[in-house]
Length: 231
Image 1 (cartoon, rainbow, N blue to C red):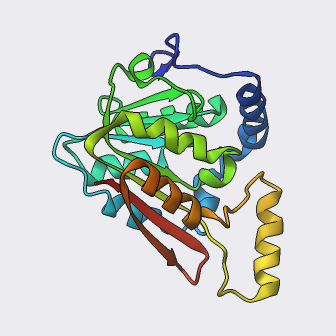
Image 2 (image 1 turned 90 degrees about the vertical axis):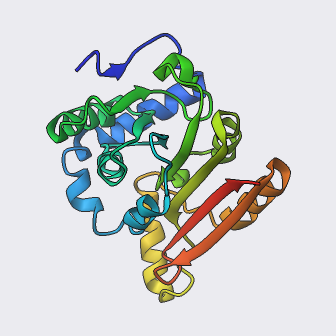
């Protein structure tokens, strides 16, 4: 297991702020990681659609930012059997569960994991690769304080035809107001903050960085799905 989760110099690139975030995430998930997949499957909506929409090229490289327990990585590996997959997470606790899940799935030869800050990791040092065909973030943007830095970090590690895919909590604008308030209050208990300005922020990033943005609100606004493609 120790050799499976990368601990190469550079795989862990954390300043004081990100170290504090790592400690906070480890505190949240130290015990929750054991029931995470069982409980989250009912309200982390849109993940399956995101995976299908990756449309990864044959023998491509796919990176997940905030890979958690590797639930997404394992299903992505099965959906794209010719691809290599990589996952980073700031929480070592989650990665311990991820490593075991990947082992149980028999996918250690295709999925690599590393602990690190999504806004400042070096993929060459972490994984020995420099570019990815697809990068996706599933329900992690709402937990990354300065999530726009992550977009800027992803841009230089994409191939010329690379894509970024995101799914996360939305405004829930079409849900009854009491239910929406209850949802947001419950999410806050787990340090989750839906990014209400996500569409505008992604549009600004796309214009500045030469991407085409596709943005959709799904499940009555409960979640949003976005895809950024180099133009």
